[in-house]
Length: 79
Image (cartoon, rainbow, N blue to C red; front, side):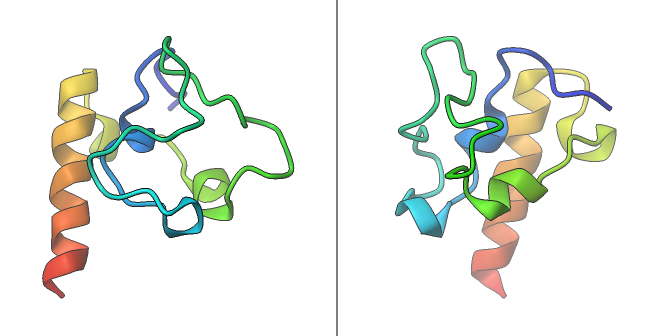
């Protein structure tokens, strides 16, 4: 699956510790168009580079992606 252009759910829902980004906050590198400004750059965090869009995570809408990623983030906090 390819990322939906302008989704940005993976840059909002999860925490990104290397950027001191809390879950639910927009990443400081997410543009107004919900595009990663570090995409393809060496300074892009490894966790972001390793994320791969998948239908089970992203669903068929941006809201589904946000809901799933928020749920997964919450599960990591509960463990």
